[in-house]
Image (cartoon, rainbow, N blue to C red; front, side, top):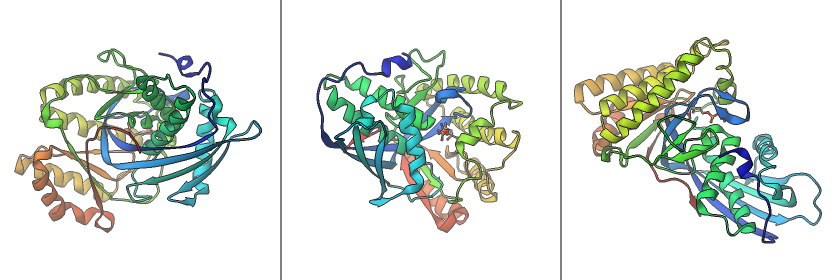
Length: 360
Ligand code: DP6
């Protein structure tokens, strides 16, 4: 697979207008993507659980322009209202993908998007948002090329989503998605996220992710700036090698269902991600005191109760609690009793592993 495979040769069907609507979920990385090369090529492979409730739904109403004026033209609405702040990111995305979707300049697009999770909750909407947008664009292209196979449709949607935001390429399929070349994964690619095809132990079915909203404000460092911190990072080489090793280990854990080992890798990946930020130049601490209090509480609870509950973090202060579905009642009680006090306005989101994006 290479970039050229995603440049279309010829459209067979004339399309003048239509509407495409897709819903794409968020995802949570177990082995983290942190560091990238140009064109959104990851510095190491990553693997994630696709979520089910935290999602973005995007609709594109498209109409062929009378004159091909060489420019991209679109209106952007967020929950039905114009949203100027999002325009630059979408414009850059459209420019980046225009060679792969040459029809883009011929249409005026009216994009309307909404999230199931609260806006500015500190949950990244770029993964689900870029994935939903890419799927709508592929929906348009498929109408112009009706012979397109569904496997290609999904691969190209992931390819395009990656160019919008790296982790978005893992939000097309589910329940587990791999992204980035790795020697244990035969068809793995730096260009697309692919649903993991290996055996997965039943303990991971319906695995829970409860997201504690510790800090809902803007992040101190955007993920794009954060990735750049890995260029010339003193520990970059070791970190990238470690991610390869952790990915190999997690693949065998998916098969055996060994939660003790799962916990060790997932928590270590989260802390390593933050350690990379703390040891870069300039350095950042993205955890808040509440993040650390939650981590300590989780460790004590796990020791005393024996419940295989662990945490992971993105590049921010919020904490994702991961645990088997059968332990839900116990863990939710623990969250209410001991962790809610650390959440901003007592807010948290209950989610679980899901199957991937859907056409609406
Ligand atoms: C910490 O995908 O948001 O969540 O490619 O610059 O858009 P860009 O970055 P982004 O990075 C996400 C990093 C992470 C880890 C992960 O999801 O693997």
